[in-house]
Image (cartoon, rainbow, N blue to C red; front, side):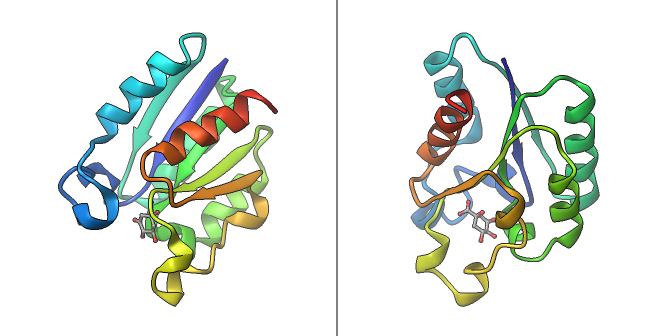
Amino acid sequence: MKILILNGPNLNRLGTREPSIYGTNTMADCMQQLAAAYPNVHFEYFQSNVEGFLIDRLQQAADEGVEGVVLNAGAYTHTSIALRDCIASLPFPVVEVHISNVHARESFRHTSMIAPVCRGVIAGFGLDSYRLAVSAIVSI
Ligand code: DQA
């Protein structure tokens, strides 16, 4: 099974970015843990700070036999109709994830443009949100 872990803007700075909110672990740590926990899953990882590159990667995933996507769209979650339209067109489940509990933060983070077209949403469990999302995808 092939699962794409896709991160949006500023998530390349995990480990040093606002550690009181996002913790001190890096995405490399997270990917290592996922690979160890799911040896039968082939993980792909992609991060971009550019909205269109995230859309390009999702469209490519559809042509590559990816069976599920764990998507942390960062701030694009709250703004991007283009990302939403792309997700709506995909043949596999996309799970929206957030490291922080967005509902306990500023009100502009309470709205998700993409949640209605995602299979589900996981937020607030730190980097463990990614593992929970993978666990959901493998059991769909
Ligand atoms: C985030 C929450 C977003 O509101 C924020 O813009 C991010 C990270 C999270 O993982 O908690 O970049 O998606």
